[in-house]
Length: 99
Ligand SMILES: [Zn+2]
Image (cartoon, rainbow, N blue to C red):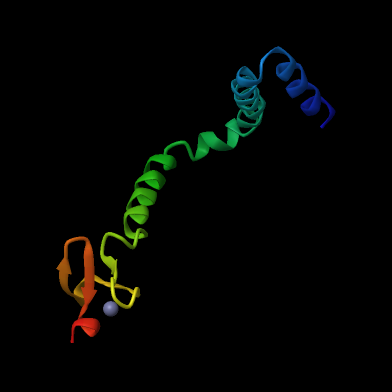
């Protein structure tokens, strides 16, 4: 912890803006050794990340509600697109409010 506090001080003395990039670079350098330590374990699962990434991308597309849900401009409830009755410009009204 002591070394972490000393590093930013020196950078702040030189220039405040550059210290941020210096910190990012030092963080990357600090995280690199831990990756090397896990290199043996990572080798076994080295082929998996590709499949994992594709799964994450699929799940991310499902999560956003905006794609198939909307917020009614009258009752302000988030409802499924199937509940859209009509749209006035950017305002979307659900079937319950239009009934
Ligand atoms: Zn509504």
